Image (tube, rainbow, N blue to C red; front, side):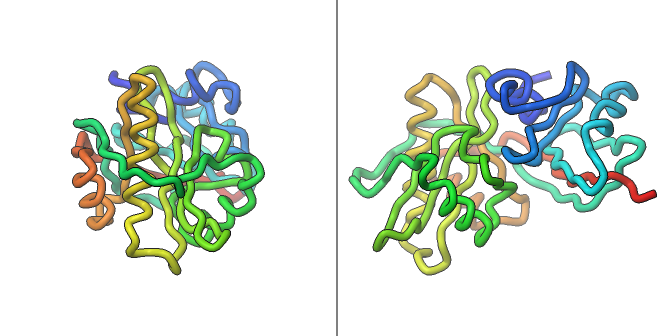
Length: 226
């Protein structure tokens, strides 16, 4: 199976293994980094291992191309359909000195912006998954974009968000292209995910040179109440 079919699993077992917990059957990110988890396949043993990683009151996010099979002991809290897109040409990056590399010092503002705009699961240490770029306007973090899942040959563009006060200025477009260009410079192919119904985001990514690869299943699972 191509690693893009199970990008979370591919990331957890390679580049992000040090930020994960679990075993050869199922893994998840440590709780303050991200909520994503994955089983290696849909075998009963792998599903049981996945369920064992979810404690009382916890939730995990699954993102994969194969249909999600809910492990015994867990229940579906939310589900949606998304698309997976891959870059098909080099990114054209607009010049500008306002794009900044974000660091640990920016983490509180990054979390605040992500909490406000909800680009996807973003926790206290999500920024440690990869490099993040941002643009400040008047000293305020106006927009950001960065890297999430990463495995040999591929890195995901994610965390793309703009503060409501600064939308309509093309900030998300510029940052997405800049992040993708950095990924390409490493000899890797950028990819990303978007909700199937988010036509504006899909259109933006198509303009940047991303093309639809496949649809994906996104499911939030939580432990079943006793």
